[in-house]
Image 1 (cartoon, each protein chain N blue to C red):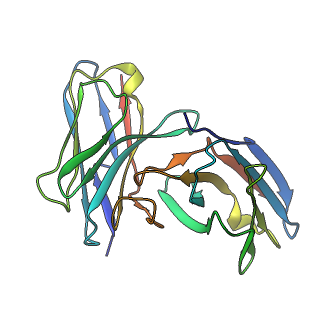
Image 2 (image 1 turned 45 degrees about the horizontal axis):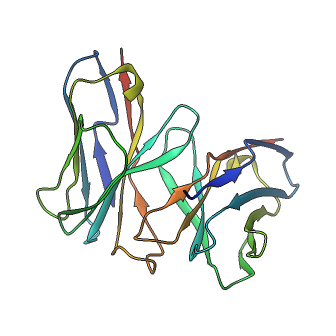
Length: 115
Length: 110
């Protein structure tokens, strides 16, 4: 069973389109995240949700909107896609937020290519 | 803000030891991690160390932490071609966020 699963794995779309990436975890974790990995492999946190509530929102354009219908799902919707949005997006989950968190499980990533 | 830095590339021969280094700036880091990313795959947690530890050993992996210098290293003994991947150092100190380095590409040649 896949612990953290993202769909789709690959996404190619034109500039200006709106797209969504879905993430689901079956670990019973309370906290979920979205990370962006750019072409230089740098990983940067975008959002974090705990029990469906937004707890971290880094400096991300408001074209990016996370949605958490329940604590097992955290979807990422992106409006008006731009070339610079091309990257691999990773979803992750952890048992709980806070400094005692020792393990975050990551999905396989979604490679988004904007043309 | 917090910063984590790693060298970008390391090449070793099969059977040698690999040492991947990482420095971080946040003195309040509580946990430090090493993740492995194989081509086309997600991030896999390899090991982690609490900030009050100096060393942790897990089979072929040895993690050394110098908290005074804010320096973390990962040693892989008897490196195999299957160890070829990108290795990310990461730290957490606050509310469950992880700050990652840019990753070190390890290339193991036969």
